[in-house]
Amino acid sequence: MSRRAGRLALVAGLFAILAAVLAGCGGGDKGRRSNRGSSINVAIVNNPQMQDLARLTPSLFTDKTDIKVNYTILDEGTLREVTTRDVAERGREFDAVMIGPYEAPQFGRDGHIIDLTRRASSDRAYDLDDVIPSVRNALSYQGRLYASPFYGESSFLMYRKDVLRRAGIEMPAHPTWRQVADIARRIDTPGRAGICLRGKAGWGELGAPFTMVLNTFGGTWWSAKPDGSVGRAMVDQPQFRRTLQFYADLVKDAGESHAAGAAYNECLAQYRSGKVAMWYDATVAASNLEADDSPVKGKTGYVPAPVERTRAAGWLWSWALAVPTSARREDLAWRYIAWATGPQYVKEAGTRSPGGWAAIPPGTRRSTYEIPEYKRATAAFAQPTLDAIESAPVGDPGTTKRPGLPGTFYVGIPEYQDVADRCTEQFSGVIAGKLSIGAALANCQNIASRVGQ
Image (cartoon, rainbow, N blue to C red; front, side, top):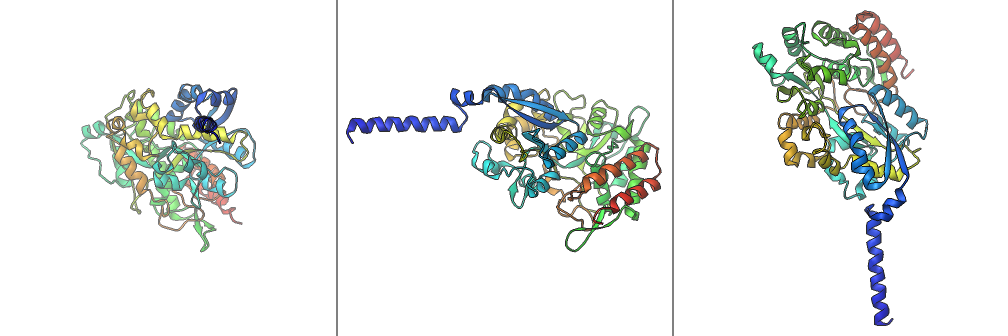
């Protein structure tokens, strides 16, 4: 080969490498032109951080990639119904869906969602090793990642420091549920409830805090056989009755208004407006309580989830994005997920969210907690959040062995969703005063007993 031909070959090679780099990074006009007119359909939950995501997507994602994102934003119960139906029945309606640790291992095991491990491992901008291990493990099956976390959470007790101070009450550093109930009744007034606890029917609504109380009271939904399969329904046991009696009495005596219809968003709104003095719920709520636009910013204290017979009683959950195996645009869906759940979104959202840095998605990445602006904005709750996530008793949430895959506020079997949805309708009826505890438990025992028969 002549020298001139060699130089031409070298130049051509360099251009080829440059083109490949641009294509691989999604850069350059050619990469954008190839996406022009493309769109994906995404189902997400109607929580404040997700509302921010939907609002910021056109400017931070679509303008840079030419990929339009069509959001379907639903409340928790409806989202779970819609995504479960679409994923399990291969409905091809969505390219990405928001699910959690209950669904991800089961859907991954059953081949309903795509294994994201290879994409996440090879995408240097995504940085898989940055994801908090306990959250990553909760969204995996046999070591393979099936959903990418948007935010991670446990649960803790939030309380108005000023209200307790005026009442001469000091919150214990590690309260029991009996202590919390006593405080709630002492500070309850006609204009401000002592505590907010979810009362809206649904396995992920009322079912979440109720099951955490049940766990620490020594109860369980089912016993487990030696092989880990479902044994006997345990709703008719004394521990279950004591839990429901305690929960319903506390809400009736010192709970929020319209408790039977109160879910996460309702409790959030009532706490922020000063209508409740304490709230047991997801740690992610602190992001909204300490946000720049929060009326109660700086007024809240945070302590671990109350216990009775267990050492810890905080749940572990993550709202995460997964790709159904029936998705029409798998590659575009991953590109969106890598952005929405990656470290870059956190950095960009911090300066653009109405709530400021405190309101960005927490609990998923170590790097989030190294951002100086975030550390300053979340000084009140960042460490309690991480402590709760790390101490969540995922493998041993109660006092007895449970069937199925690991979990905290749910039992990791496919039937749990339907059973808990139907049973919490009964429990919500008790809270509303429409049903007796005896009748609700009898109905629920009958429902739960059909599992495994």
